[in-house]
Length: 107
Image (tube, rainbow, N blue to C red; front, top):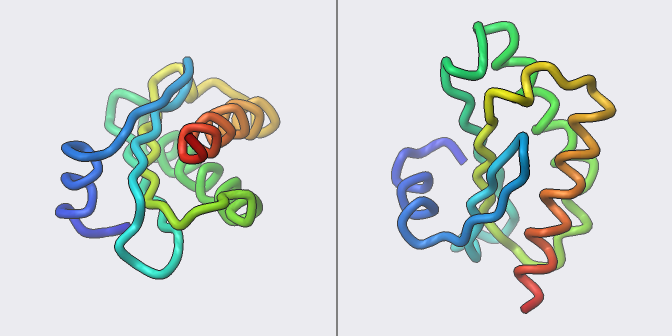
């Protein structure tokens, strides 16, 4: 997702799940495939840290989007604490987050 209106639609109408490192807003997609949006504010860290976190979230989504049973839009908000995670810890936190999204979508 790239458009501001898509992020606003998620923030107003979407459901929210989260953990210590990330928050996810999700909603049934109006498009034909699942989409990902990432928000990492300056509070997370400098540009290097923010871009690293966005790359890791994108990579996790790319590798695991087949596990999403429904077509949904997801906006992942990166929290400040995630800046100090290793790649393995980041993927573990994202796995937990995406499992919560999938289980919430099934209900």
